[in-house]
Image 1 (cartoon, rainbow, N blue to C red):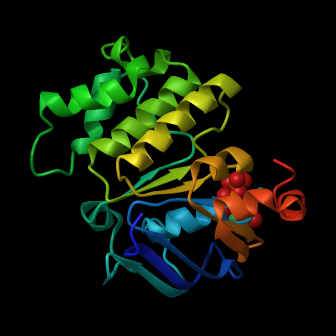
Image 2 (cartoon, helix red, strand yellow):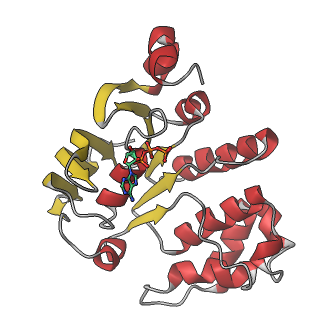
Length: 239
Ligand code: ATP
């Protein structure tokens, strides 16, 4: 991973009502890195991703992507700059086929996806190949999650944000999904990942941040965070 920042937030504050959920969150993701944002339920991880993606307005602070201030831009303009959020819960269109769901990821692009591109994606997600023309609602949870990531990749992201990709998946499926995420990272895709599966997320990541009640309480290389048993049990429930 290079030393050039893809995303920087400085003193980011955001919330839903009177009180801010995010308390001055400063974080960076460099080009080519996979970074894990970890923390207990309610720590503010989804709020952070939603704010960066432009789905919520910050109350203060900066959001900089590739050296441009994206704070206050509407979500579609943020997508146009290459920041793509795969939200928790996957947002699958159950009646559409798997192929149609994936192609939706390209809807903002100026050029239509060519067959080679879909082919490359299917090589990455072999489980989806056999089911390409089935209604997406018939997929298992893990397959739907893979489809959601594939859809995100269809928009050719410069930064992919993943919210809880392992949520509700069987252990074998989680392993398979993480193996794919690691491959994507090795291909140079920059990823910011939120997950309850802290050890697994860190094992796949370069660096990590730990959020507790809206504040960053620890950050470091994934290896250093993983080796810190006290930290893991204090903030991540041993997970
Ligand atoms: P989880 O893993 O449970 O999603 P999280 O770390 O992603 O946890 P957030 O979903 O960002 O946490 O929630 C942070 C805080 O904001 C929580 O106290 C939550 O109750 C509150 N919150 C989240 N969404 C809303 C909302 N739409 N309106 C009001 N409060 C909200």
